[in-house]
Image 1 (tube, rainbow, N blue to C red):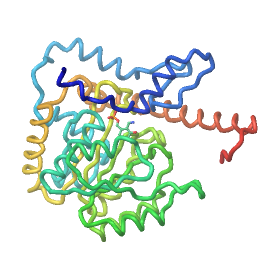
Image 2: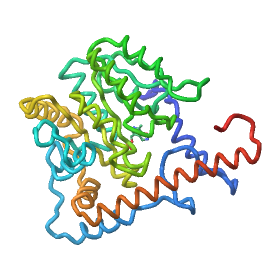
Image 3: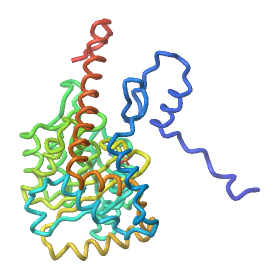
Image 4: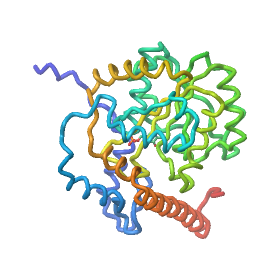
Length: 344
Ligand code: PMP
């Protein structure tokens, strides 16, 4: 008998199973509403023109090689990524109490941050919104967190944010709970707190000594504006919070399979930077040792070149406005067809 004969088949990953079913479906008017990957009008994936430009330049650069990157990644990338999140003139930059860690896309940044919090600070309770991206729970549990908890978020009746429920759940959270917050474009509801509601969330989290772990998978996608979409994170920093933020470059750069991410860390004191970095170095050393270079070099190339940066912002605006138009078109067609239900 095989030692593996007792292994049972695991359940399918819903979103990938749905995508496979979609690809196998022969109906010619099929529409994919599953995986959140950008498509052109022709229904095709889109490699951003700035990404092609960067890749050509990198391919021709004979000074680049395939040596290992440092454990914490390509520093030019992590610095630019962190700045993109915090804003060029954020005081925490000159106060030397922020840094980034290159990770395997947004998921990897969540995992590295969570594993550090579990192992080095002994945190064990985490809260995610009800509903949330289906992977948050598994990533935190696998990172060593023991107590998964939900905070209320979507109000079915009201068809909007359940701010009172949310605040009540946070008020009842034990000290040092890690609260996963979607920086913008909440997945799956698409419903974000208003600035006034963020203020209330920050008030409770400050009072209850909760740790904000932002998940920023869609900066630039919600509004088309990188600064607007980072407002929540910047607001928490301006309030004096220490926080982590997992940044993904999968959607806004269309670099899904390159696994480009950054764990942006903001601490109270510059003295904590070296120790925290050194502990995260050991977290990563024991997990995958060091990150791949290709995607990070593409992002760094674009973000460090003012002309390409501007072109990339145009690319993001094009994608986000198309998404918004698609939603409007879908809604108005549903309404025109008098589809049962409320489409407001
Ligand atoms: N967080 C949220 C809310 C997401 O929607 C996604 C992607 N679907 C991710 C994180 C992680 O994506 P990736 O690991 O591809 O960057």
